[in-house]
Length: 222
Image (cartoon, rainbow, N blue to C red; front, side):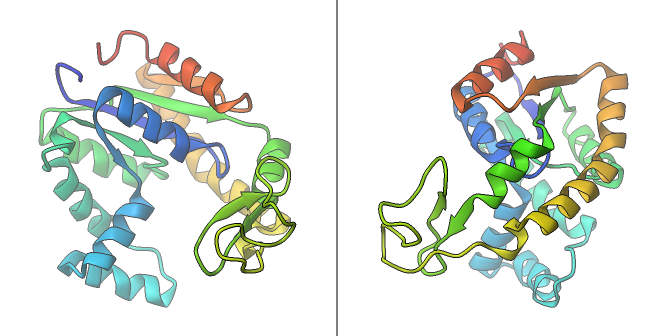
């Protein structure tokens, strides 16, 4: 456990492995893992007032406004676990979200301690994402090269035929990467100017990535 609240950003393109590494960092430092996607789904599932408001946007296919996401973040930051610190999984994604997060942290006399950027070549990202196969029944996820099912095209858990999600198809992935880099480049420059950006090779195996992330954090959190 850290001696004060620790706030770590984990940034990187789709398929870079942010979720996996964010969970490991959160466990290692005993802080809260915040994924805005999971946060939204959790509030919707609980049927909270914030969740019901978010659901209206999600059902229309619209982005949930930053202000509403901010209210949910505030709730988490004031939670028992969140008060110890947080690892932000792929958030913020825009300069507007960055400003919102900074304001929320400032109210708690906290700041972003380090921004960790997972750098992965596009060809590797495409291979990772386009190789995914998902079970539409139970939600299990496989990969044709690195984690194939026992029977090709069939879910091990429930026997349902696996599918490739539309947003995992090559053309869509390329567009997602283009949009991501357009909005993220200014963030990387901002954190670099502050002296808190640390870039890590995310193309190596997950254990090595985690080792390098810990090294990049240096004495932060000790």
